[in-house]
Image (tube, rainbow over all chains, first blue to last red):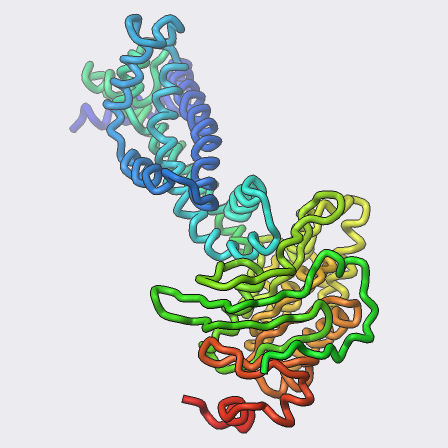
Length: 235
Length: 259
């Protein structure tokens, strides 16, 4: 019990003093996950909007697939990206394995289906309301998608948040394709896994605390935006 | 029975935008949904000016008639020609042939101003004219002070007036209203009817779906009485109220319940 208490004390120390190792790991985590989130949102929102507002052959199949991929196991994504990027893989020449870029790719694959599926659910309801209005204006497919995305912007913040939560907290995929190399590809979750297995609980705890603080901060910000939107009755 | 109507409002000068719209002609139009016939063998012609009121009990097929007319739904058999076919103006831009206003206004999750600006932008309205045209539309709907209010925070009457102002801002050749005042109080109904009268005077074709007989008397130039998916009468309003032409229509006017 005393050991754990001590670990907590050191952990708080590390967080409060902004330990340089800790900071490096936190910043890399944020960089990887935010980049992955930005690209996943770009792809996922476009796909979600297209599925919600257009009718094309294969649409239902895509919906089933992205819904199924929402719960994709991170280690499987890691394995697939590893096979693609490894020396003997089709993209081996790019030399991306064990770089932050590889981790970003893995996280994009992991969260794009989630973002697309949730975005589709939000926009489908909005589209059924707007459909006749759109059609009476003879709007182009692109304009329809743009309007739906803009009018659902506050709900889509929650969608982005879900994607970010999954990206920042997963460990399986980034461990395989990043390799948890110190100062290169070590991020919060992989560091926690490593430090725990080494028995250095203080650093692991410090990282754990930081992870929770970041996640609470981001969720509060999103909640605040959502609430103020409701107050202005845009939601 | 389905004679073409002598247009009582024929004196109204045709304005240039009417050139985009042809009279709408229904020929032997049927609509079945899940095998159930909802529109049965309708034939009629609606002129490009004047106020046509589609009157009839709930479930008669009045709203379906409007949706068929705009092309929002396709008939199971028969043809609908005119009106909708010309969807582009001379410059090749999509032109709104009909503007639609529904019983429950569909408003974007934006301010009142942005709701109107949205359709103008779709019509490639020059940026310089935008503010003036939106302001004029809001004024017409008596919503001057509400420009910045989120549309969905307006009262029911204000929302419907905004939807109507948005429908009219593009100077559509045709304005179709589906029970647009069914859930409004008398004051808002009066403003809406005034806006409809003004649009009519400006040369816009009005098609108004209602089950309210007094409203039909106030608005109609000609009446299309619909029941069970069929047109039972299509006459100038004055003639219709004198002689509805069928027992069912007479019963409806007398306030007896048709079953």
